[in-house]
Structures are given as structure tokens and as C-alpha cells.
Length: 269
Image 1 (cartoon, one colour):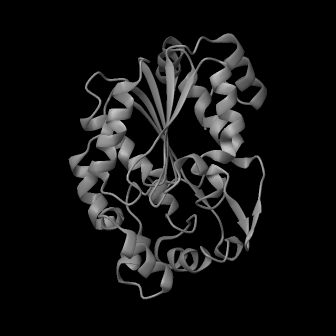
Image 2 (tube, helix red, strand yellow; image 1 turned 90 degrees about the vertical axis):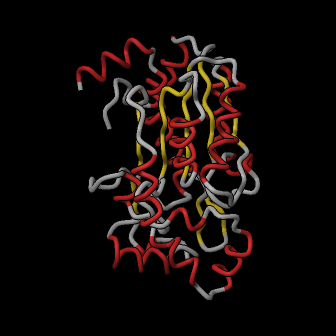
């Protein structure tokens, strides 16, 4: 990953030396997130740092299992209400698709400057297909709550989405994708990870890495679908570490750079 700021210490320097009074970070949760504040809670120390540096950090509360268009419309409304001209979207899983759609259709003033996606199924995931036809308790439970979003996450549906929703040339898109070997996944994700490994290669337990990265590059980190936002589980015991903080800092630093430096960096790449 290319960045002028390579370490957490540089992140602290950036926060200390730059003015973020015109910058906002919008956190976009994924599918099935019924409690958005809990979704991003493991990264709370990072959000506090940013707020202390006068950067506004807000969570977008979207329909938990709704369609991308409905979720994106709500996200767009959140962004339009912000009195900040620079907006960085940090989106996990399905939230990355909502951010892409919102940028395409619901950002008329061009506030969105960067979209960072974490393990977003840009090319879809076979797990969405399996969940629609599965007969396990978990798949039946998901279907009972689904409000149209699940079927939009299939590879076929995402192929249509990518044709209809182009990237904007004035936005920087950073797609992060992780992977973990099936036998290292939590018990809940392991069956999906094993099947995905056989059908689609490296994955995080729910999303193939190639789909999250939007190409066939190797994974950015060794982590499962939830570890990248700080939710890590060993069987039923919650485990905390700093991997997600390191990931977020590394992704945020280039996005937080002053526009002039960002343009210079893009030109030198």
C-alpha cells in the first residue's frame, strides 16, 4: 500500500499538523448491522483521536437488510446534511456498495473525496447465493429478516451493478481485502470459508479476496471478515487486538492528506 505516511507515529503527526475542520469521515456499516454504534465500537479510540483533531466522524444508520439503492439514499442524505466540504467514506462489507451508489447518484455537490472499502463484495459473493437456498438455521434466519439486500450481493447481481454504477473520476477508491485459511476461521465462518476456498480461492470467510480487491491481487492482510473492523472471536470468546486500528490508520492517512499533496501523490504514482 502506497502512502507518504507509513507508521502510526506519522498518523499522529498528521493529526497534529493538519487542519481537519473541513473534513468529515462517514462510517458505513454492512449487511445485518442492527446496532451501528456497536459495529464500529472497537475502533472508538481512533474516532476519538480524529474528533480531537476537529475531524467530524459520523455513523450512517442504514436499513440493516435493505436494498443497496435504499441504503445509499439514506447515506446520501447523511452526507448532504454535513457542513463539511471534504467527505471520506469508510465502509465495510455491503456498506462499500452503498457508498459507491451514493457517490454516483446522491452526492450532487461532489462532497465525497475518498471511498475506502473493507472486504466489500464488489464482484459479489457465492455466499449470498448459498444463503438464499440454504436450509440451515442461520440461512433461514437471515432470509426471514432480509428486505431485498441479500440477493443483490450475488456475483450475477453485482455484475449488473458494476455495469450500471460507474466509479467517479474525481473520487479516490481504495479497496481493501483480507484472507484467512479456512482452518483458522472462527467456527461460524469456517464452513463458508472452506467452500469459498474450493470455488473462489482466498477469502475472509464470507467474501472472496478477489471480489474485495476488485482484481486478482493478493490479500492486504491476514484477517477474517469481521476482524478488519475489530470484532474478533475465538469460539464464543471475544478477543481484542490492534490489527484493525493499524489497517484503518494505513488506509486513512493518504485520504486525510491535504488535497494538494494528494494530487501530487497521485501524479507521482
